[in-house]
Image (cartoon, rainbow, N blue to C red; front, side):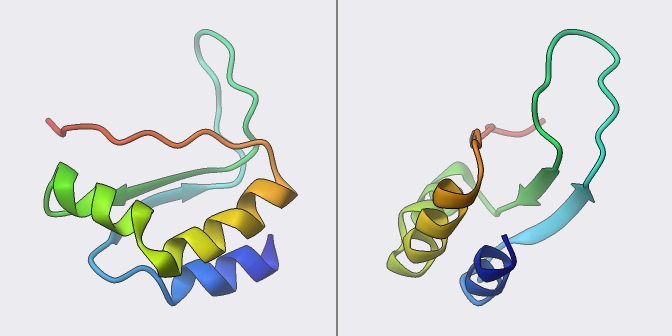
Length: 77
């Protein structure tokens, strides 16, 4: 995941890191992850543009090869 972190870092334009937790505490339901990252973007469109960008997709391939992951875009609150 170190290679992913390095590659993703250079593709983070427009993102604000709100939270990173390497040991999230499940208080209800099932959660199989051992790391959670929450990013904030200006809009859903900005989040989708970042995710679909060539720079992030190169990083995403490294993440997908190294871990079983989920990714979601939320409209906000």
